[in-house]
Length: 399
Image (cartoon, rainbow, N blue to C red; front, top):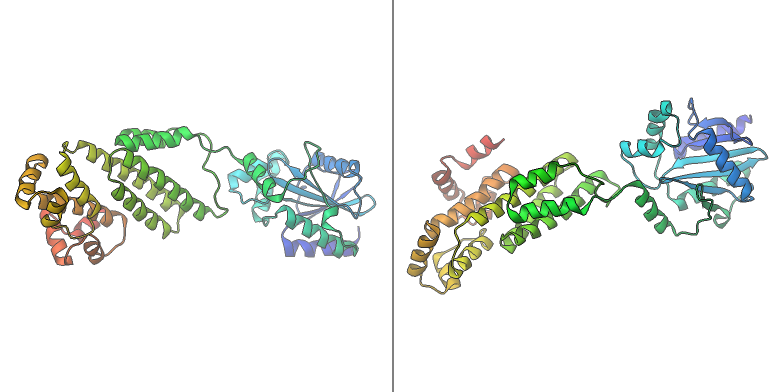
């Protein structure tokens, strides 16, 4: 075998990290780059690719790219009579290890699966256009004969049909082969549990066996988790509103959770926060449903408190909203809700403070300002009166 050719192929692999294989006219692998104890694709596949190459009347100036289910490209070009170069396997989409193993199970012997999987995970992502460009470059370097991109035929190795798809549509079809989207039943069950304020139903839905998987929105795993989180937060906030949670409170809660998820750098932490968010929404709806039925006047009062929880709230503000004098409103509120307006406002603010202390790293000063308290010391005093401990003691006990 030509030592100069071998040297060029070794150098090309070291630069591109894309697997290359030399094969003879019978489909037998003569050499692989990187050097391995086995072929990247089995003998049956190489023979099938060679057969297609000849049936389509391909030659050194007219290479072939085959699409192999479920989502691989494999290029073949003729270097000399009865000497061919395979480029790949390559894929245009990022894969997790388990996905890669599942994809290559049909093109590799069982004893070579793990080694081939490692190779595939180290191989750069290669689009159809990129592979065409690479084959043109290889032809120029190895044979001093440039190839025009339109002379590279792309076909499906299994259907034997010539493809005329645009790269974007081809990518879409590959995604459809790789996974089945998660059933809408799962989403419906989660949203119904939140809308009903049922923590037990939520837990059952979260841990029940699931079919399919979340659609791939990003090639980056961390960004994928963040995108998924935003989608789930939107669904949960609307389910909570359907369950009776005030809209502004529900949307504000969604914003707060999304901001928290955005700064996380660990996908597992994002999934953990997602579970806490769903539970929080469910609990808030449950508490809302357990509240005594209020008259329209007091309902307006409760809605105002919920929406303006992060601001100073005065009795005069509430009296204007409800259309009652401060004395009449205070008496009516105590009669229907069983507590004074001032105490109710503090209780609602402190529920929010407890959440922030458990799930964020906001300072006590930031939390007191966020909840509309005039000072950190006043916030600390009120917190201790209602919980029996300081905010810092509560935070330390929660971790």
